[in-house]
Image (tube, helix red, strand yellow):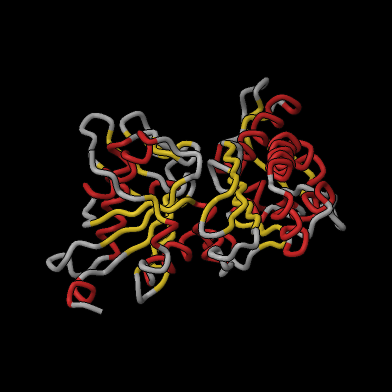
Length: 342
C-alpha cells in the first residue's frame, strides 16, 4: 500500500434509481439513502438530500420540488445527480484536504456511451480523482462472492428500482445480458394504477411502495394477508380507507413480474449450451431490492425448472461488489469499464 492509498479514501457507489449506497474501502457500507433531492424551485437551492428529501415526495408546496434524478437506472437530471453525489461523497470522506478519492460506480449493463459519460462526469465534478465504471450484474456477482473469473457460467438476476438486469457471466465478462427497464418502480406504479382503475382510489408513490413491501408477492402465499390503506376517493373526492389483500396486490403485480420472467426466459434461450449446463448445476442467483418480493424465487423456479437462490442481504450485493473491486483493483481490472477521455 503506497502513501497515495493511505491518504485517499477510495469509495464504491451503487448509484441506484431508488437508493444510493456508498462503501468506503477499509470501513464497509457507510451510507444507504434514497436517491432523492429536494430543491427550491425559484433558486434551485438544495434543501434536503436522501431520506429527508424522500419524506417530501408527494407532499411539497409549489415552491419546493422533490425529485429522483435517476430514471430507469440512468441519469435523467444531470445537475441534480451531481449534487446528490457530491453530498454523499462529502458525508463519507472526512479528510477532504488529502487526496481525492478513487471511485467505482456501478451502472446498468444496458447503458449507452452518453449515459456512461454522464455518470463519469458527475462523479468527477463531485470530487473523484479517478472514476471506474462497473456493470451492475457483475458487481452483484462479485458482491455475492461468486467466482466471476472462472470459465463456468453464473446467472445473476438483479432486480433494482429502475432496471432488472439478467446476465450470464463467465471468464470475467458478461456473455449475454438483458437489461429491462421494469423493476421495483414499475411494481409500485402497477399497484397505483390497479387501485385507481378497479377501486377509484388514488394513492401516492410512497403508499404504493409500502403496500408492495408489506403484502406484495409473486407467487401464491401459504397465508394470504391484508392491509388497511388510505387514499383519496376519485369519485367523492374525499380521503378514504379500504382493505386490500395480498391476492389483489399479486394480481396488480402480475404484469411487471411476467415481464421479468419473460426476460429471464429469453436470456436462457440465448445462453450457449455449455454455460446452460453450468447454470443447471449452480442455479440462478437473485439480487437487488426486488429479490425481497415474496415468492419471486418460487415463481422463477416454477417457470425455468432451475434452482433459484436469493442472495444474503440482496439490497447490498452491488455495493459490496464495488467494495471488493476497490480492495483489489489489479485483480478485477478486466471487469471494469475503462475511463475514456474524449
